[in-house]
Amino acid sequence: MTTSYRFDQAIAKLYNAFYNNTLNPECCVHCAVGNILDNKDAWKHLSDQHGALQLNYVGLVNQNLGRKFNGYSPLELLKIEAEFLKGCGYSVPLTHSGKKPKNPKDKDILFNGLCRTVAYLCTLDGFENVMDYSKLFELDTQSEHHKLQNVGG
Image 1 (cartoon, rainbow, N blue to C red):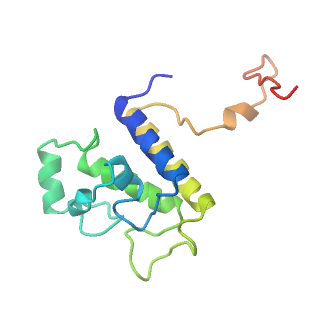
Image 2 (cartoon, helix red, strand yellow; image 1 turned 30 degrees about the horizontal axis):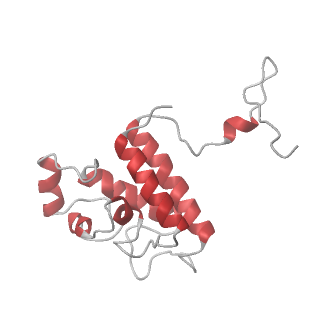
């Protein structure tokens, strides 16, 4: 499957953040979008709240000018972050009284957030979700879809 440059870069950054334990949904520098944007927090000025889906004046200006940040428009960035936060168990936008996980740095929680983020990144670029493993378990009586090799012997 052929992917886009922006997708490949985003996935590499998210993968590294996850495995280097630097992914933090509550920090604008270390969240999904913060990592995609090279651990910069300037993107937080595109909306008035972390996790919001509405662009503020600055966000609208950048969106209307066609500005891209590492390949993503301001509105795409807000949607990416919202998907990540929802996948981690937050209600969006983030508020003090909103729903949030007990341990936001738990690997299972972060993995769920990343799965939802990757699914959305795939949707943005118009290809199948690379994290979808359901095809491995499909049963087709006519032919075998996927054959896994026994690596262990």
